[in-house]
Amino acid sequence: MVSKEVRKTRYRTELVEHLSYYRAEYEYDECIFAYTTKSKPYGSTLKIKMNVSPK
Image 1: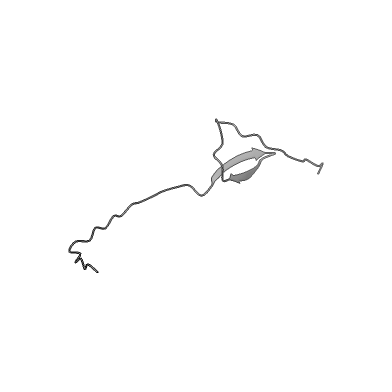
Image 2: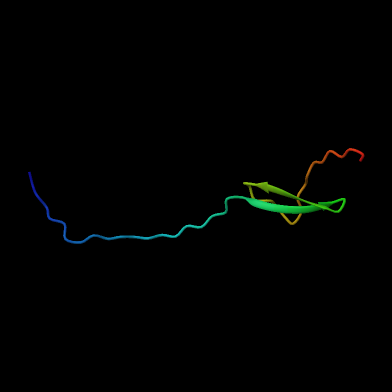
């Protein structure tokens, strides 16, 4: 059995940033709605599906 003494220790600190979700806001009939998704939207437009009922 061989013994080896360790005389130096290295530490490394790393900062990692990431988004938890993407949030898009849109307006319909003077009301503001929000949509969140974990995947990144492509482009500057976002397709949404709405069901609208008469008031």
